[in-house]
Image 1 (cartoon, helix red, strand yellow):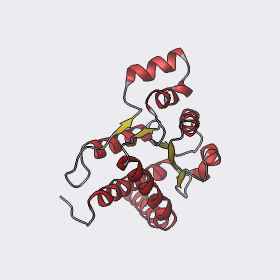
Image 2: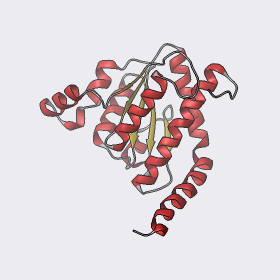
Image 3: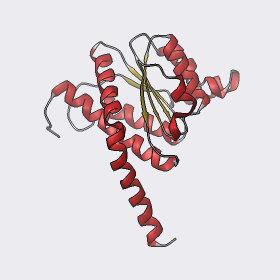
Length: 198
């Protein structure tokens, strides 16, 4: 591998982030408002995704249960990707497609938010979780790429769709991470105002 190949990764990522900022600023703002309203009303956020997106779910939960960049009270966020007993039991006894939807049925209530990740927009288990969330009158914030796929078509006008304008999973996931940091910051600012970082 030569240095130019490495540099090209950084360049492509940087160029996509600049382009995505213009496209995604409005839906990210909508997601912040939806989540802040839910948290202010005593509701919670459930997050689901596969593979690298599962790790991002856990990162998001850690930032809100712990802290992002300032001290505050813990906020109720559950990553539905972490309990190996639930994931393997449901996957074995039912199907892998239900590993998230069963948890949304168990933990989700009207007014809660489902934060759903699928770079392809076509993850069947994420789509199943969205369907259950919609049935339970939960808000949905979906982070996708690849034109949104089946998930983009499933979302209602009340949901928020943050669709990265790219078709390469690595780049999409990088923008998803920046998006989550924007959401964490936006929630902190909505809670406390100002631009003070600690």
